[in-house]
Image (cartoon, rainbow, N blue to C red; front, side, top):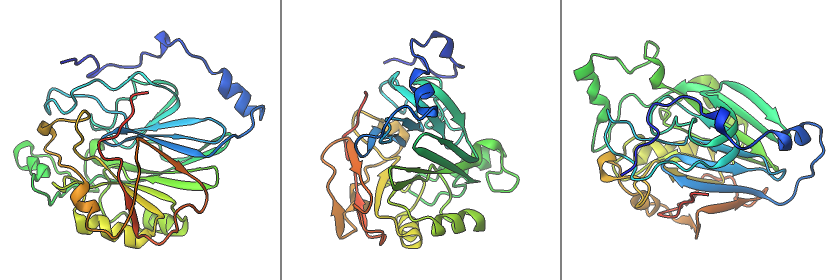
Length: 285
């Protein structure tokens, strides 16, 4: 059992990479090639690769001794251009592990480079879980109030909207099911091709009905669960369960046979009906 990266700071001074590709991209010296690719690393972590080859990693994870052994293996030291996190919890915030040229924790606002545009929508983490393990009841023991507006920073959350290659992808993080009016309005006005939602059989973050309501509200082309139990990614100590039971409650199920999804404009009709899962498929490269 390895636990190398727990609470470490930046290791960037030791990285054997540099920003030569970014220098070319900012000068417009590279040309786009291919479609948008999404790779799943397990738990809530995805990598989006643009047609220009810019890579965005969202929510790499780590173990934290205060919460138990959630992950049997360390997150890989994968090379990426941009690494971002949705919130300050150990299973989402390990930006010190990947070899990233740019890191942004809980970014609010808009960042653009080359053929990508990232919008960070500031909202709040789920603070009143309704699942089988109601982990938010820990407030009774700690005396901390998770509910906004007086919550501590770790109960904030950023929903990321990534636009590239003519498609829009949204990562929910661990956001509450009913975001505020500004965030709700933004999501309704910007059609989503692929939406990543934290839903599993234990209903750790979102309940089935809450996830379905989000799909109905924003009409994504395809909704994909994240933050679920997958063999080789997380352990039963996480209290998570598989996502397949939720998937099976839907009629329009799209097959993803590997840890990679290719997304092209118009590939998935934006009607809020289609779902898919990476299942136990994940990458470490």
